[in-house]
Image (cartoon, rainbow, N blue to C red; front, side, top):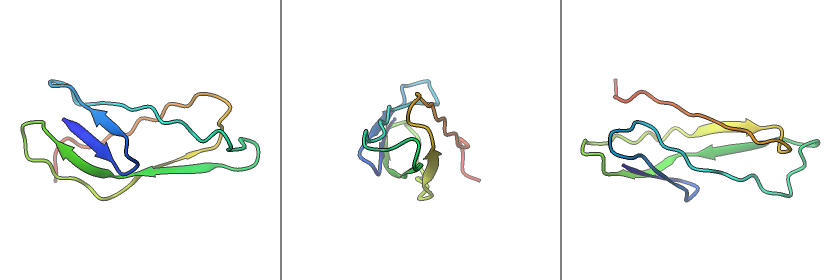
Length: 82
């Protein structure tokens, strides 16, 4: 499955897997000591996967408060629609 995010990044989820990832770099002009940054993205499209796909329009958001150290963010969702 290929998932294209609203920020232009693409996540590829290989066959047989349920997760994928993509690196995101915070702008180097951010000052880790003065402000935080909110990163938000939605799924713009999802193709492949062999099953009908329902795309949520709710954005995934996280606040980055420390750009001095590497931070890993993990987002999860239910594999089915209720």
